Image (cartoon, rainbow, N blue to C red; front, side):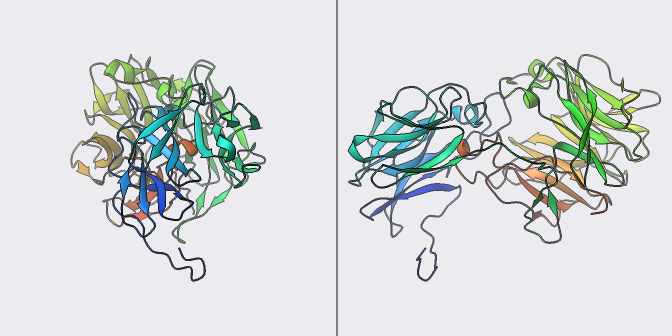
Length: 472
């Protein structure tokens, strides 16, 4: 961009994101990180995407594009040496990009600080242990960087000199290296559950809620879960939509609640209860086979909104969760994982009879307010896509097909639209800076038949598990 005229011209193009540009002191080159050509490969034994990123340089006129790092891992945030002959970056394996995303819980580990010359020759810099990010050459041969690992979080130096401590995400040093400005994460104050968010479409209002919210029929309260790593068990909460004030509806000290849904009549809350290590164990649990996905088993429970009448309505060794009631409240659909069978099931609450709806790797089913369709996510072609099916098992339709994962859908109260989370827009920054397991999550809305697709959010953070508030 020309500062005087504010005119901008494209410097790079192609699929994927280009991040963290750095201009060489001589003005000839721009170094940047990019995930072009990388796609969104799944983390080993997980569904979150790894971030494969390379270091590139390009001349300031857009010519001479070169890849400096070896493809397949991650190298990011390049910074130039004073003589414009080398860049320094932090590097790690692709799998470590998921391990080191959290700031508060980043485990002790090691990332490498690596220098590259313009021919692509690399050399590792000896800077000791630690999850190191955002390195920079400083005057006098010093190198400054940020550490994310919990044992020494803050700004550090290759010489061993100590810098500011805390959850620091990025830093920039003055030309003489004597001062540093940085971004530090501070404790949250006040209630953020009522915060209004920016919306790309004026006809849609976005507000922040807790985890996996589901509104009651009037829209003045919603049910949600909080995040407590297992095996301690989390809380199932009822929250006032206007104020964010919450009360505990259910707690089990040995199991977690997951995927709550308010019944259409408002007289019950239905949810999954189990270990759910994939959601509540900080990426420590991996899932390579059907027994892994069973995860010790889980059941569907129902409770009254006043906290009375809790009961489990499913039994057996399978992992049963993400229930959703039919509009008349007589049946509910849920997903099941087992060593012998997977898919969606429908249970009659009066007779306890169970019928098979699908037998695929399906999840997150939601019954439409009109009762005519059940929407769900299915693993297809190495992506999660959204499907619909009639409650009698007929008329199966695939509604999304773009690269990226589409899931966690929610119905509008009239049944005409669904809102869902997707990764199709890709990463907006290097994943290590986001402190989110899925920083590519954006919210889209479309009609129930898959038409009129519109994007609601666009940023480098994770938006997921949307819920529609009745009356809004």
